[in-house]
Amino acid sequence: MKEFIEKLRTGSLTGDERIIPIYCEYDEPDINRSEVLRYAGFPASVLRAKGKGKKDDSFCEVPTDEELAKRLDEVIGLAKGQFIYRLSYACAVLGRDDEGYPVLPFKQHSDDLKKNLENCRGVIILAATVGAGIDRLIRRYERTGPATGLLLQGMGAERVETLVDAFNDEVNRTCDAMGMKAHPRYSPGYGDLPITVQPDLLKLLEAEKRLGITLNASYMMSPSKSVTAVIGIS
Image (spheres, rainbow, N blue to C red):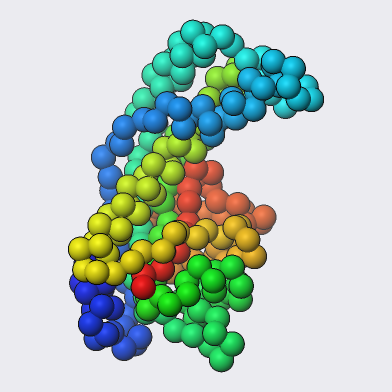
């Protein structure tokens, strides 16, 4: 990554370089308990439980703060050893077509991505996953223990976002050290960038072979706690 960003800075890349995915494994990052609860939807649940919104069956009964803290501890214990932290990324020079749309190693025609990548010279494309273990736990508990299942969903989301944040921080630090700028990461499914780009993106990153990520007929990834994204460099 460092060499790629340095060559972007000096303008020594031609765009004809072979795109080679790079595989990384990470140690387990610290758990952000408040983010687990946010991803689990508990703030909205609390509001509904206090009568500040329409009640429905989509949220289980909300425990007291003390009960919630205890249950979260139990869920963290249940999920211990279930996560792997794997990521694959590739660096590519960014071209433009006649309409100014970014030319990437996967086909797209997104106005929102065009805006996000404005003034960028290159991109870092990534896929990350925390594995299928959390999916198995969620399926096990979502019917028999809805509150536990909800917290497991939140924990899985927090884990993969924390993994991608760790990589994003590396990109930011490397860019800052070279006087370059990393743009906010952008993922398929946001704005007008469709999830139908996923097959080409995942193929580019050898995500099935390296990370075990596959797609179903609806372009949803398995393991479900997986993320793909593009980070522009200007």
